[in-house]
Length: 437
Image 1 (cartoon, one colour):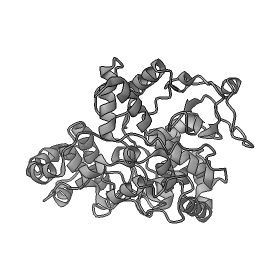
Image 2: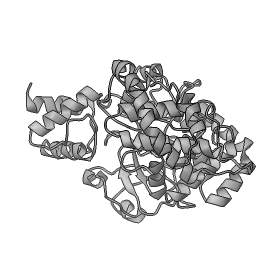
Image 3: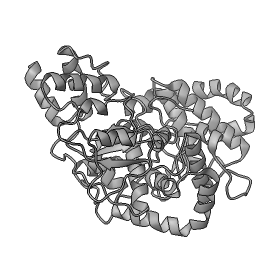
Image 4: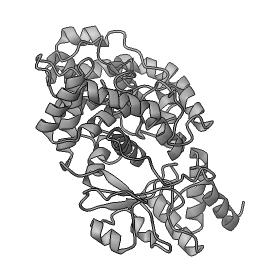
């Protein structure tokens, strides 16, 4: 089980070229082009400041034999046979592309509107509705057993692998071994996932040749990490194997089982788009603030014209692109999706795709396309400047975490600006003016 910002079910492989297309505006709104890129869903931040490709090619290759030799005894303790270890570890080499992929994850290089436009495109909605029809009986049975809305299950499938079209074709064993060697922040995490992957092979759920997935070792139609597979994968088609690579029933049931364990509340929506009243207190968008729907209504929040408020329970208010972009109240089911992948953009994309699959309307609010989020060098600069101005932004690591967001809000308040915590190009320009060269 992963914690903090670590994803439970990773995304499949994608191509760096796809990110360049996103940044060039290939999908600049939720109303995406008729043809979407054949790639996979989003990625969760794994590590920053990782080794570059030359380090992988030279240093990691030399270290791999010793790493494998030290891994073997621990794998044997997990019940993995020497025969299997010989089969999958002999001659193992690192994957030279993984760290490029790690450094260019769409949640950090794409705009929220480009990200949403790709994942909730017209084509993906059309294909998802076809999957709902084609798998209606199985989805009904899954919904009955686990209590998770079938539209959300299919939305996860769509976001993670375009309904099985792009589940990733990298060797999971090779990817995890590469990360265990090269990600200096979390080598033990990756090593543990690798040992679990070997145990899965020993169980016989999949053959070594078919155990493929993303650069991060996420597997199958809905991209489970090995430890999540062990805990939550389901054999829903009854063939004796939990086959999330080739069996849609197994993959979809596994997803529902995971979301149920993550706290899914049957009958509740993931969230609802809202309109903020003039002069709204943006402190209420800070992390940790939760209120009932009635309390938010009393504060002046309304749904877009002509739309209903679904059942939600206790909710928080999020502004994924700042106060100039769309606003959402999100509840427990949004938090359950976050446990699948702890990224706001990911959970919002899954929830909104599920809404569209169910026939609900597109996002009404306009995205602030004239104020894109900062790239990593600019985020680093912002953190350093804020800290120098007396607003502690935490370590200068390029990650817009809670400390950095709090520093942004505090600085915005002092300047008399909308304190929404949005780290866009406008903000950096304003901070530069107050901090000098």
